[in-house]
Image: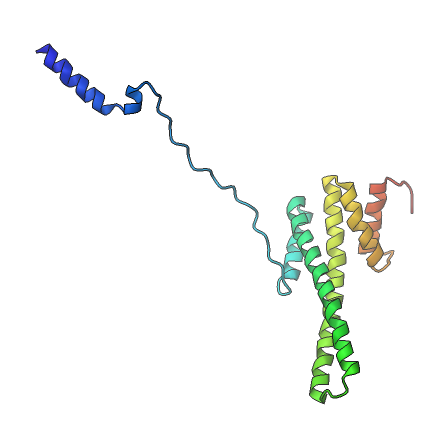
Length: 188
């Protein structure tokens, strides 16, 4: 009576075990799927949102969120640089068309003048944005301790921004940051 019980018990026990365990192998737990880390969302910059994105970058910079503000200002800098390059391609073509094509109708001439004014306005807007974003990029790199990158952008600001001795001007703020990066002492 004990023998049939033991045989039945061993059969039930053998069926419940994995064949790999019966063969002396250990069972591995399944690996959990790799978790995706949330990447910071890239902000698409365009003419419609560039001003609001700039204000967001300024707010982050003031809150000492240097990496986030640097990402935003680098995006604005690149966008404004590319926009200025594009405008420099378009502008001479409009001028050439106006000056070399006497067969244009009055309506076509007016349309080209309106486009030229728009190009001029956009050039002013993006030149200013490029200067301001370059300042913030340089300042963010300076905060991160990357003096070489900071100098690159701040020197560009000093070369392109209008000269001003106003303490709040971008030119003077850039110059003062450069002095600190160059470790020059005294007034300059």
